[in-house]
Amino acid sequence: MTENGQEAQVKFEVRLGAKDLMDFKAYHNYHSLGGVAALLFGIIALVICEVSVNRVNISYTLMMGFFGIFFTVYTPVGMWMKARQQIKNVDAFKQPLSYTVTNEKIIVEQGEIHEELLWSDIYRIKCTGKSLILYITAVRANILPLRELGGCTEAFLKIAGEQLKPFQLKLNAAKAIEKSRR
Image (tube, rainbow, N blue to C red; front, top):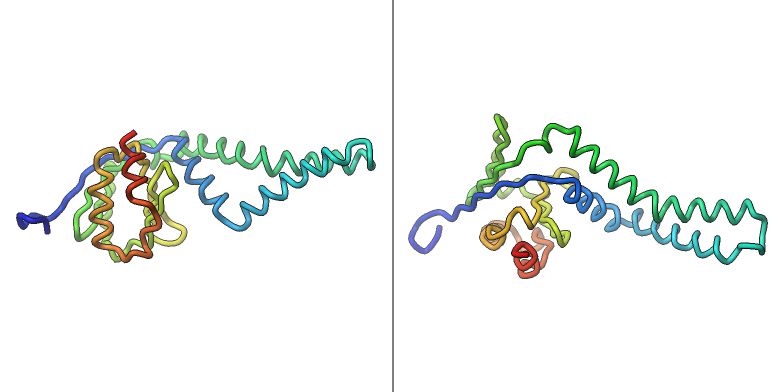
């Protein structure tokens, strides 16, 4: 409830683009042990490739160069291409999602589809720097680009802060609000 007895409510609409999906994919890839290890391996392979030129068998040098390029260049390019393809081909990304956030629940609507999420259904909220990721489970999430939230970010995070436990909000609210205003 707000000071005047009215329930707090925030409404906003979110349209995802390939950049938003890429940000989400990169965040998950490079915030996991496997993603960081693959990137480090790629960098090390490129260094070994450079150092081994004219010192060892050419096939070893080429193999290290291939692995280095694969893990440092191909992985992010592949993620970008997949994100673009998903935005283009998946029907769920073609229409905007409308959110209504109250102290009791989050209502998500897209065309004929209507879903209500209680705050107790929310697993965690994280910020990538460009988006808020609203996790329903460890593997199911909604992406809320900060540029789409704009002036609603502060009100949304205020309600979320009141309804969720502190460990469920993995973000710096002040930074998220500032980035949403840009």
